[in-house]
Length: 339
Image (tube, rainbow, N blue to C red; front, side, top):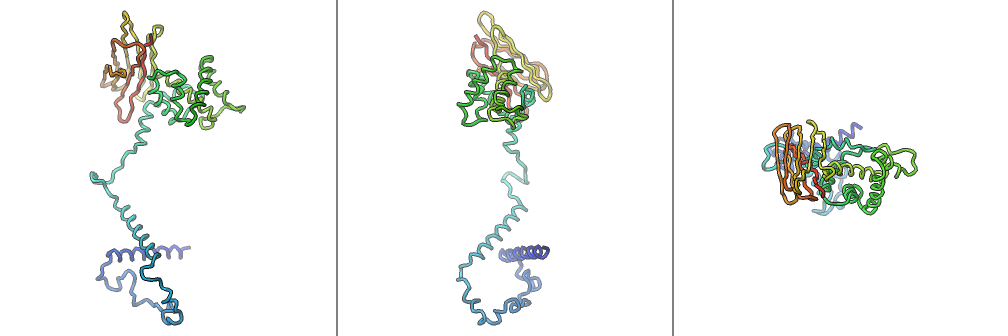
């Protein structure tokens, strides 16, 4: 084993010496005893190749030589030596961009996207689900729900669109499942609904799935629908004459974000009032699709208040809360005053 290793090492050293000689790295003025290939006068060629001493004994030594220029094996070997040497040199001296003076590590876009998605994860982890969803699944549903909450769609369609990217090529099946899901949601309270969802797709198994990955595809879809429905409810402020004010509380790393929104109707003119208790520096903005907006900001924790007069009934407004932290997306709520 050691003999084979030593032989391989010696072969690599000879290859490197040969390549140095080809590239002109060897000083031609070297004395024979410094020749990297050894002294050619000291090599006994006849001992290693008896045919050289008596060419007639082996005529194939001459007649079997390949034509000049027809040396693919040598060419392949030479290319391999060049490639290996270039690889070694590049690894020793990595190339730099024109603006660099040294090797720098750059943040990948994937890592940045993960930071953006997880900015509001703490609240999502508190959703009361029978089985916890993976963070990546939960944040992807949340991202979809932020955009869908402002759209005037039926609840079933909103839920399907919030999760359809998780179950490609299943739109028709998801719509049918959403119908069953919403029917159960209207006749049951939250606790019994969650138990019923697992029963619907248990497939005669005596046990419920222990994790999201262990669940069947229909069970995963129902769990995703339940998460989407709760997220959409958290992101919507639907104000009516019977419910003119609503509150939400979102836990953040620095403390809780408390939001209270009220619709004040005076002689047919509606005003939307927003009060926020923020745990750190923050900017809040209330605007609609026509960019009618009001904005307030603070440099530290405290209370922020804004008022939007002459709000249009049944129009969707967006309440945007921006923490100003790097690589974090704003938290957006849909605010609508119903007639």
